[in-house]
Length: 180
Image 1: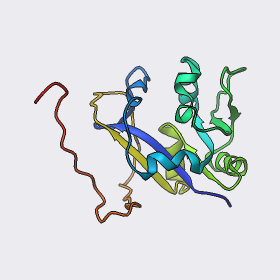
Image 2 (image 1 turned 180 degrees about the horizontal axis):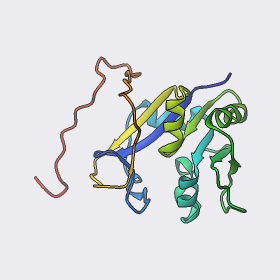
Image 3 (image 1 turned 90 degrees about the vertical axis):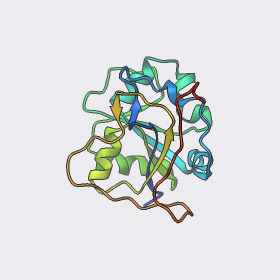
Image 4 (image 1 turned 90 degrees about the horizontal axis):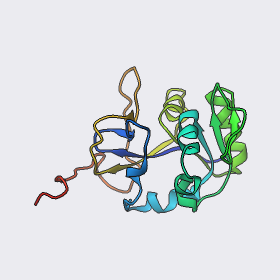
């Protein structure tokens, strides 16, 4: 069957993965400490992203938005109902459902994990019971709007901590930049 299906994402403190204009540049330049930040790119054998991710990356310099700052290479699948005629990015378009997309990515990952990017693709995998793990980095910034980490209807989904710690929630002590 292969590796796990993981959602590796960074979010603002107020729960957005992209600014209102789609920009994710605010993520770069932050040090994400911990085992997950260092080892996750090596675990991933293939990536599935959505059309919004594709279009935002295609509008930017690929050298800036390339996954894991170029420390990763492998197949990237873009799941969409509307594939473009051509793309400047090294991606393969899929027009399947989330189940078939994950099977395709698992085959391409050669036993490694499948990484999910964006918001809608991971939500679909979560709702289909296909998501095994979420690795989320909280960036100390308040965006005030944009694309939500996980916008969904339905009952709460309880998560359990997979780290070697005895707590399942994080406590941060933050202040606005420039304040003492």
